Length: 180
Image (cartoon, rainbow, N blue to C red; front, side, top):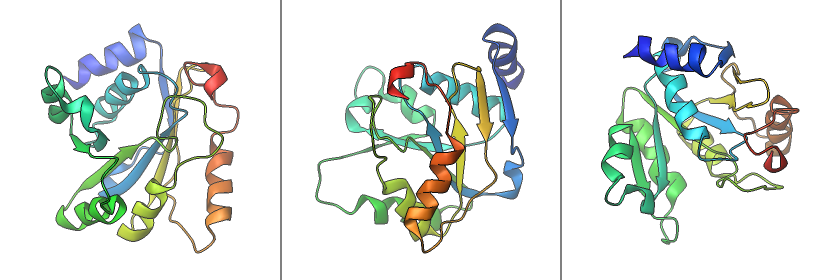
């Protein structure tokens, strides 16, 4: 099926992938994809992981996992999360990294498809708690490109880390440019 993903991604949709592609060297990572501006980001991400041959997991709001589409999201590696519970989601997700030999969690740092002025921090604290790198991926609809960063390990300077990550996404236009 990888050949079909490549055909759709490259030849039909006209997308390309640049940057880091040695996912065999990192068995565990938090993968962030941005800007997340449209539902079409998800199929591009699914195609990208098939093109690269990379197994990834993701979490999503529990309403996505209900009938009739829930089985599709589970089959694609998804797990529902209850966003409004008083549980420590960071600890629970970070624990998943310790329970698996290979676990790559894909997330949107914005946490929504709308325009945001500040990213959510859960992905950062998950990576820090699990002691795994962050890999950044662009969803650049203007250039039809997914640029992938080298694995980045958090430091003790959160502000500098976020500045570094935001710089990676400078100039990237999502499907809905005004939300980028």
